[in-house]
Length: 410
Image (cartoon, rainbow, N blue to C red; front, side):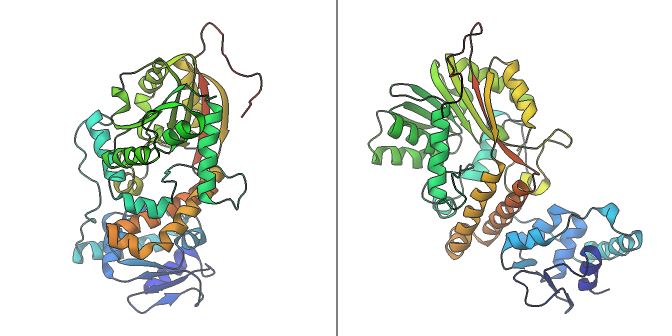
C-alpha cells in the first residue's frame, strides 16, 4: 500500500493539504499552501520505535519529514484522530508495516533530545539543569524570535492588531497596576527571564526591583541592560534559585511564567514561600499556563518534555487558586488570557520565519525545527482551549484586613 493511500485513509480524501512520499505516491489537492513530504523510510522507522507525537517530532527534527509552507496552517488542517477511530483492518496493516521498518531501519533520537534525567524531580539541581536546557541556547536566537522586548511570556493585546512589543509593554504594565506599584515600593520578580518586568517596574514606577532566574545567560543579559539604562540603583537580576532569596518584606511579588516549572507536589511550599516574602497586605501576581481542568495528567507530552520544557507540569486553575488560599494568599482577581497567548505565539512564529536563515545558522537546523513545531502547535492549543493562561492576584491579608480597592482600579 502506497504511503499516500495510508495518509488518505487515515485522514480522509478531502484534507486540504498535499502529501508526498519518497515512494513517489501523493494525495490531496496539488498546489496547496502547505504540504507534508516524507523524505525517507527513516521517518516511518521513527514512528515504529515511538508511535504518536514523539515519533513524528523526531522524524521532523531529523529532517526525514518536511513541512512545506506555514507550519501552523499545516497543523490546523489535520482532524483529531485517535487510534480507536481507525478501522481495525487498517490498524493491522499499519502495525505490520511499521514493524518491518523498525527491524530494517534502526534509528536514534535526535541529539537535542533531553533524555538523561538524574536526581530528584524539581530538586534545585535538576530545576537548574532543566531551565538551562531551554533558556541557555542563544540570546541572539531569542532576540530574533521574541522581538526587542525579549519577553518570553504571554503578551496582552488591547487590540488584535497591536504590535508584539506594544502588547508586551501592556502586559508588564497590567501586572504593575494589579500589584499596585508605587515609587519606593519593593518588588520581587521570580523567574525574571531577561528582566522585562524588573526593568518596567524600576523605569516606569520607581520601584526597587529584584529579579531571579536560573539561566545565567538571561541574568547577564538583564544586568547589561539595567546598566545601559542607568537603573542600577533600582533594579537587579540575579542568577539564583528563587528559594535562595534571603530578603523579605516585599510590597509585591510577581511570578510570570514560572509556575509551569514548579510541579504539583511543590505548590504548597511554593505559595508558602511567596507569602512569607510579602509584608502584610502585600500582593502576589501569579501568571502561568494551565490545563483547562483536572481530567488529564499534569505532566507535559513527550515532545514538550523532551525537547522544550523538561519536567514541565500544568495544573488546572482551580487547583492553583485552592493552593493559594490554603497557604495564606487570598485571591482577589483572576482572568484567563488564552486568546492573548495565541496572538503572542503568532507573533513569535512570524519572527522565526522572518529570521529563519539566521536562526538556523545560530542554533542549528534541528533546534530551529523544534521551535517551529513547538510554537505553532502551542498556538493551536491555545486557540482550541487545550491549554489556557491565567493571571491570579492574591494578597497576604491579616485578620481579615486587606488593603485592596473595593473594585479593580487597574
